[in-house]
Length: 161
Image 1 (tube, rainbow, N blue to C red):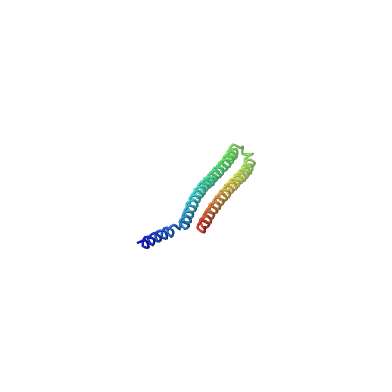
Image 2: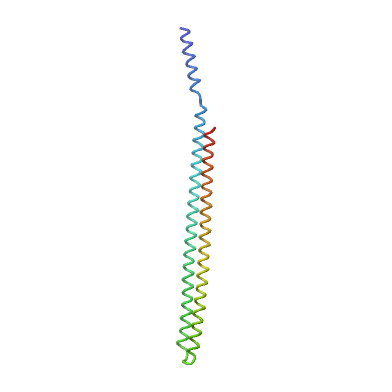
């Protein structure tokens, strides 16, 4: 009976010692923690990227609206100057009509030139704002990609331990 009891106790201790290999469980736990941390960091980075994208899009739309407004104002100013010059032609005496028409044509040309310059400047400003917005988006995307890669590396390192 003593031999039987000794065998049972020995086998019990052997099975307990065999079952206590906690190193892989700890490793899996560390990998899980690293993965959760990486997922959290990635989600945070993606949220920041989305926020930057939204701001950049709003900035570009605002620049387009401002450019459109500037173009409209320039065209209105040119039209106003042209009407004023042509009104002078109508009021001019018969003797001065040819001279007034020449002056009105000159005024038309200057008004068109001024409107074109304002339009070009407004378009250039809007294009610059769009380029800056796209640069902001690209920078945010790069940061997000870096965070994702860093998280994957951390998960790999934790799994290798």
